[in-house]
Image 1 (tube, protein in one colour):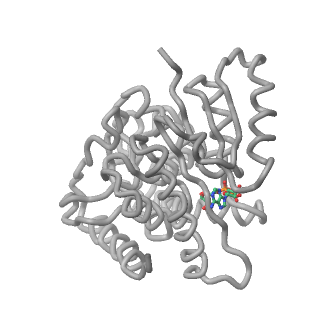
Image 2: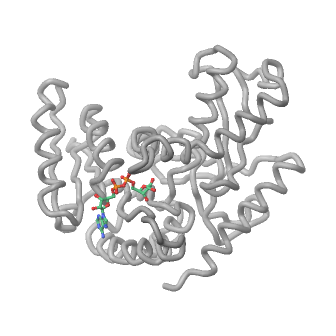
Amino acid sequence: MARKKIGLIGGGQIGGVIAQLAATRELGDVVILDVTEGVPQGKALDMWEGMPVFGSDAKITGTNNYADLKGCDAIVITAGVPRKPGMSRDDLLNINIGIMKNVADNLKQHCPDAFVVVVSNPLDVMVYACQKLTGFPANKVCGMAGLLDSARFRAFVAAEIGVSVEDVSAMVLGGHGDSMVPLVDYCTVNGIPITKFLSADTIKAIVDRTKQAGGEVVALLKTGSAFVSPAVCALEMVESYLKDKKRLIACAAKLNGEYGKEGYYIGVPTIIGAGGVEKIVDLELNTADKALFDTSFGHVKEMIDGLKF
Ligand code: APR
């Protein structure tokens, strides 16, 4: 059986780590596409030359040509530009939507059957744009954010209680931004609610840190945003699709009546398998979390309604 083929559109910080992990785990052959000439080729060559040490036969190639993505089973999109001093969020959005138009045109032409995971920010808007512009079925286009926000929540809870991260499970819903909703009711240590271990004040501090976690990394790095944890999470989603693992993962999916909403992408629990986003799990939320989710949905909807395609 031929190896799977994974395409990465955007070969910057996140794309580079995904390529490395995908290849070392032999999840498939990897093609890195970027607009910068030589960089994806150079990165790919460097990584491929290290594969004998990992015992991996995965091929890694770099390109500036979308035709090389033909036949990809899965695509991760990290292409985009970050905000620069003096730029408004709207300026950024308009540039990144322009990039997504170009990406979408090429995906339609070269990878019409791929499962697509969008990572570029602002996430919920970019994934909406990707699905709309490609016209791909909504179950084949999703966004990576909830898994990362949930991982951060898990890490903070595990460290505070002093238990293994393996035993902490958590779910963060809503938009990928300040309005995200870490669900305390659904955060447990092997099924035991975290309220058995932590005070209300400590839990509140963890929830607040989770919401600001991306910004905490940016403030330290100063010249970029988190790239290792986003890469690991995006690859986890790709793996669940390629291996039909049916992982239950929080990701940005297009609602169709779940949570009383439809027609927009936002972070919700999903099951990802060979059918892409096979199911959206419609959780019962307490009154406070439901209100927060509705507010978050309102923010995302407002941004999307303001888009000019
Ligand atoms: N087509 C392909 N690649 C592009 C395009 C384009 N039209 N425009 C820009 N790129 C590439 C850049 O050349 C760069 O290599 O996208 C890459 C983005 O990489 P980084 O700037 O290193 O950003 P990264 O940290 O990887 O984050 C990517 O994910 O989490 C989000 O906020 C983050 O939107 C950002 C994205």
